[in-house]
Image (cartoon, rainbow, N blue to C red):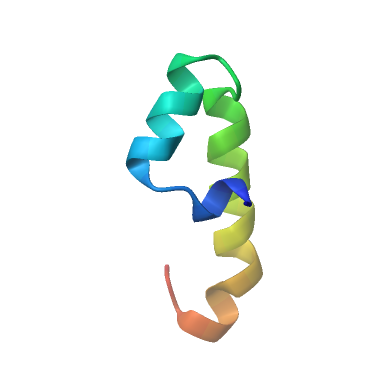
Length: 43
């Protein structure tokens, strides 16, 4: 599963267990927004 597909609950657990970093999660979500924004107009 890609980081941008995680639910808040899943992401929270991974962050709590230090399996991912907040920086890594944020970057994945921002990269996804950048990749699809022209199509979906998210921002």
